[in-house]
Image: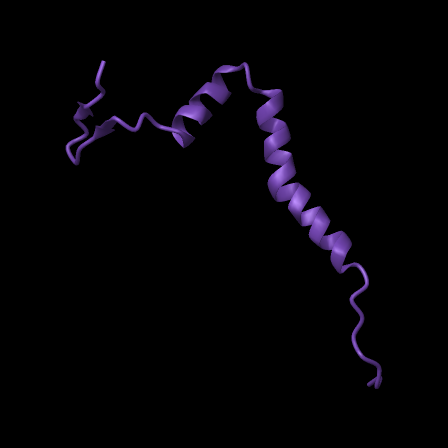
Amino acid sequence: MQDQPHHNKGVLAAFIGVALFLIGLPVIIFIVTFGSDWSGTFVEMIFPETCAYEDSNHNKIDNCEN
């Protein structure tokens, strides 16, 4: 065993790599595919209509004021 303290070399590079992979890559993919049908479905899934919802029997309830 060595009596030297642990070093933190590479921690910042690893953190930046993980952050880019988990945050940056999905953002880049979303921007590149923004005009396709996939992105429309993704946006509707993430940001649903707040005034329309489904009850437990999967009936669509529309409370939107037109």
